[in-house]
Image 1 (cartoon, rainbow, N blue to C red):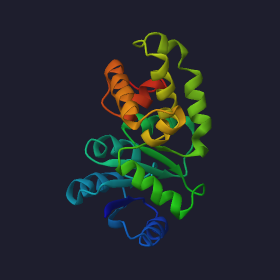
Image 2: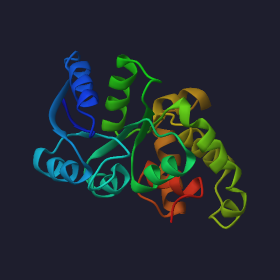
Image 3: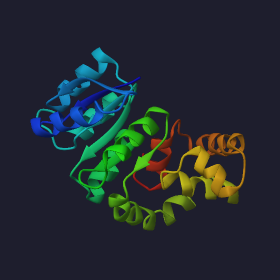
Length: 207
């Protein structure tokens, strides 16, 4: 059973998400937060596997809350905001996923929660323009990065697109163990410890 915390200042959205997730046997909503500060506090108290965060909330916004929550929990941004700056900020803050309201169905949301809980990355097709814009700005930054092998470049390109280790292995016709080895080498070369940080750095939006 995956424990989920829902954080959104809109009560209708909170109620809808709870009702939606209650339809899945392996998902349980353990709490609701009405602002970013409460989300941080409840994430620490309830220790859910995944926190669903809206971007624009009072007191503390979702991106600022993600910085604190993502240190220990998987964060999935669930919002109406799809502009490049917000997407970049969320990934930089440590979010493992980004979905835009109105672009996913219940099964897709449930799958996204399971994916980020397992350590994967989920990026909605709706934010593709933001990712493309960031990719167009990576040329000079990548020139100053440690050199990756051709295979590592292929793996990283798929990671940025939100592919899981399983799908990367299938796409590249290699084993999952080999994919994990490539990813670990990439992390070492980039000086990062996880997918979100690697993606942020690769897209030129990390530190």
